[in-house]
Image (cartoon, rainbow, N blue to C red):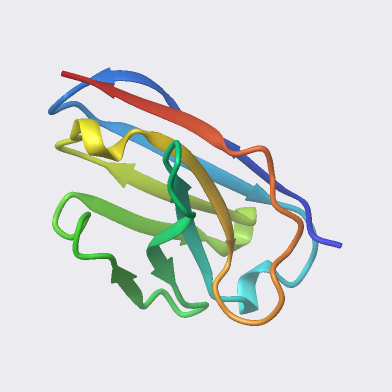
Length: 115
């Protein structure tokens, strides 16, 4: 079973930047489409960015132009560069696959954007 470990969250002022990382164990990471999800208090988890095994990307409208997803298959790691952060980006961010059965969810990483 693949294990996912998210890191890089923190407290940042509106307009600031953060870079999240997702480290995955296992040998199948490179062939799986992956994504970043987030869950704000009282809201459902939502997919904000996805990347195919070949590097094709897709973004939710709410983050398009501000967030950039990338992956390094050699390191079994995925990233989310978040710029021009807004208070509404405050959430716990998780990584997981975007097709098929989810891997076990990691603990996520908290992102808090202050005004």
